[in-house]
Image (tube, rainbow over all chains, first blue to last red; front, side, top):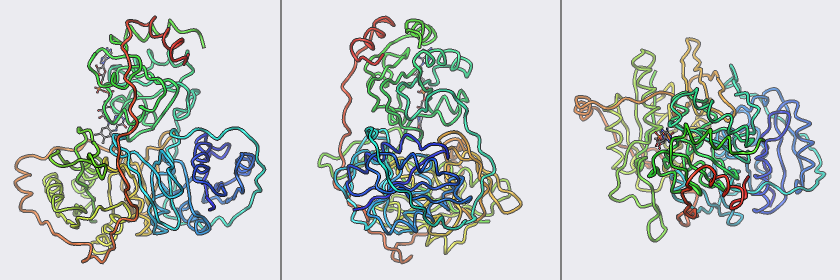
Length: 313
Length: 250
Ligand SMILES: Cc1cc2nc3c(=O)[nH]c(=O)nc-3n(C[C@H](O)[C@H](O)[C@H](O)COP(=O)(O)OP(=O)(O)OC[C@H]3O[C@@H](n4cnc5c(N)ncnc54)[C@H](O)[C@@H]3O)c2cc1C
């Protein structure tokens, strides 16, 4: 078996999720090749080639690959896929965008968002907002998989020396172009890989209070900030903060849910966290059913008190 | 321009799904079913295009059992002009649905397909992208804003991991709706009555000459690992103490 893992990157470094996707690939077994596609991404490719367990790094470069355009990326991987038994990528906004397109181009099924590798052809994935897990076997000649990165440990340290192999970059499908990109600037750790996440919901009441109460707490814990859908819809924070079934899935060491009721759709994105703390004035809020530690009361008093009780970062 | 909107009948989002006792599938019998919420948003976007004079017709399509007629009637009550059911009792996986929609699109020649970004039952998030590939069209997934330009392009703002990306896609295209694209309307009683008279056509995969057998074998469904129940703490001091000494996370 030879597997192709498609690396996600920002042209400077690969995304931390690559280390978790590689762990999933190792659980499947076989030789692991990694594709780095982009424009001016030699440094990313070199960093990937130094990872343990990577046999070959394929490097595809061209201006049409610069923006991670789904049409162009799917067309590129389609050319490479016939040499592989499995193609894997992270179940991120990017992987979810281009991988299904590739699946249809190859006429094979895609197993999305896996949380477990049962064997080389059998995988488990959450369905129904994670209320149920489903185990599927695939008999497709090429198995396409997106990996829920938080369900796998990061590849353990080590060193590799995989050779770099340039590959044909394909052509520009010319179906779409980027008009603009507005990335949220933040000095905080990335939500998906942070050790601690502080999340706020509708209970915060306003954007001002969301930031006034949660930023100092997050500062002390060196935490990423997250939010419920309600908090995003109300404009307290932007869409990339949303945790849940249809937002991001996180599994930090510590997740602090403030003024969040704990709807199934929210739990879907955080219930695999190691330790969960909930602060809510409603003692019957469903969030308490998954919380290791529940604090019942008014968040306007409890959050500043908690912030004050923590040692400086 | 005709807009095609695929709609799926799913377990209502307020109901927590459970596996059947034998682990063969998810228990659905006797439970409330509704239109997939993301499809409601896609449909609302299509109806608004029609109201703005940018679309001539909204065609709702569902693939599934006869019960999906109910979902299509809802779509008609909300403002779709016509409905089409591709009836099948087989467990339709995303690639099969994409192939059915592809066949329907070849028959209907829409200028735009507006889908929900995912169905909240299998959470696959695949069908729209697969359909775009089969048609050879552009795709713009996870849309939170949509604007049709005179140039024949659609400008779509997409919710991505780090923020927002705006794409200009050439039409025809497949666009998949995210939560914040709009707030869907409710069907009014007069419109529900009117919907009963709107055309609803039924086809089969055989008539469309599409092979829909499942590609993946579902071996079992199960409960996910349970979290051990936690405790309520008395105050902030106890919380900090337990975080430090019990779970050792601080
Ligand atoms: C298709 C679909 C997809 C969805 N996807 C997601 C998703 O990805 N992520 C997500 O989060 N949601 C999602 N939702 C929405 C979800 O169903 C809930 O509506 C949402 O999570 C509720 O957000 P909330 O907990 O902030 O608000 P609420 O449910 O309104 O809860 C607010 C909480 O704050 C508490 N509170 C209020 N004031 C105070 C105070 N002063 N002190 C302490 N506590 C206080 C209240 O007791 C309450 O429990 C989705 C819904 C649908 C239909």
